[in-house]
Image (tube, rainbow, N blue to C red):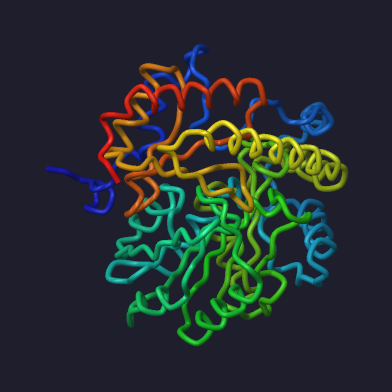
Length: 392
């Protein structure tokens, strides 16, 4: 007899790891499949963690995060967005993914309905489905030179049991950035319908026009039904550290404390020391990484842009492109073929939600020489197999 709940038994491995895991440690592969570069976290941040260990900082701490880190986050967010956050709204539960999971668990259960604005990172789908809720996608549209979200599509998807709506901006994988007026309209819709808006803003500093992306924090009141999830992985190149934060209504503070304890017993304490250092001394790192990603984006446009079979939409933020290969029958077969024949790792489009079978995702955060070589190999693969794609 299968002891697993039906929701767990029905889960499938996401398409990124399905392609990557068989060759994840192969040095011959140019890995463009995951959302990270190939440079280690800056030395002074690593030194802060080492110092914390040398200081014997290895004990339990508050389940919502060390006070000095929560204070540093308040200073950072207040300065970044020109706001005055109530301290009780900030929690550091562990990895950003833990924050997303807790947010979903707070409001969703069997029989509920949840909306994901897609294309979206596939782990969000799994996280929502583990609650027993029914999941529906509202897909961004490719319009002209960019991706757009039509809020009428969101309204049409609403149901009486809609309890949560997920949006990621800047978006993984499309690079779409939601404009402030649309954020205000979506938040008002969630207020009216009493829907929890879960906003993933982990790419908030990875934008190519300005210093920071628009945030729901700039418009949300203390009691609004919105949880903004963020983290250190992308802006400070700290992917392996597994630390993020959430900003939620202050009335949820006790629930965050309890659930953080259930999921992770609090974030790793010496990593929190390093996170404080990143916030207080890391602005130069953020700016330098953003410049690197901007140059990577230009290389992608240069190399993929010369292949007629590939339709490329330039991203506004994050560090991915989500190209369409016209006539591609299977994005999984395409990704596996590129890996087998060219030793380049990319992510198949199907795993980012419905309507994406002709797409693939690649990350351009890698060093530029390695990135260019990987792109050249992808173009070579497409040109070699051009007669296998459907016309149109």
